[in-house]
Length: 227
Image (cartoon, rainbow, N blue to C red; front, side, top):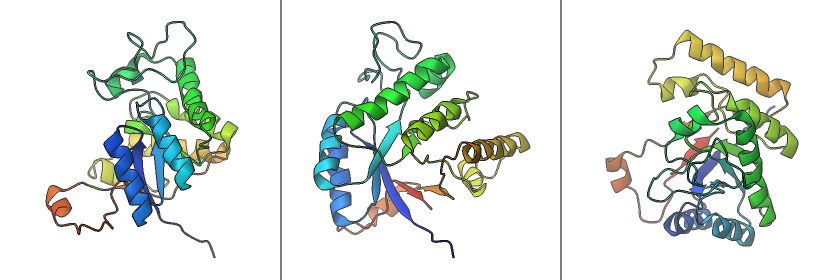
C-alpha cells in the first residue's frame, strides 16, 4: 500500500525579520512541517541559520524577481558582467518582467547560485519550489526545464502538482485544453527526468474573516499545503 504524506509548508523564509520570526514560531508550535528560503532576500542568511539551529526542514524557494521596487534584491549569481535578469544590479520587482527578458542560461545560473548560497550556510535544501510560479511555464517560458535539470543535479523534488485539480483551483475552473496539455507535458518531462512531484498542491485562501477567527495558539495551517 502506498503511503501518503501531508506537508504543510510556509514559504518566503528570509523575506524579512517578521517573516523569519513567524516561520520559526510555526515550526516550534508544530503548525508547519516545512519551509523554503528566498535566497536573494535580505534575511535569507539569518533564515538559514534558524533552520540549521532548529533542525527545520527547508527547501530553496527559487525566485527570478524581488517583489518591490523600493527594496530590490541583488541576484545570488554575480559574474561582474551584465545579466538579462538584472537591472541596476537588482532582480526586477515584477515577475512578468523577469520572465519576459530573462535568458535561459542566466536563469540556470541564478537558480544554481541560490541553491549554493543556502548550502554554503550549511543549510542543504530538501526540495525546490517556485516563488510566484515563474518556473511553472504559465508565463510562456519553459523555465521548468531549467528547474528540473537542477533538481536532477541536486536530487531535489520539485513543488508542482500532478493532479489536474490544482489547475481547476488556480484558474477557477476555466482551464483550457491547451493548459491541460501543457500540464500533462510538464508531468511527463518530470517523470522522464526522474524529478519527484507532489500529488497535489493547495494554497490557503487567506480569507480575512477566517483569519480573524483563528485561535491564538496557532494550528492555522497557513502557507502552502502539499498533498
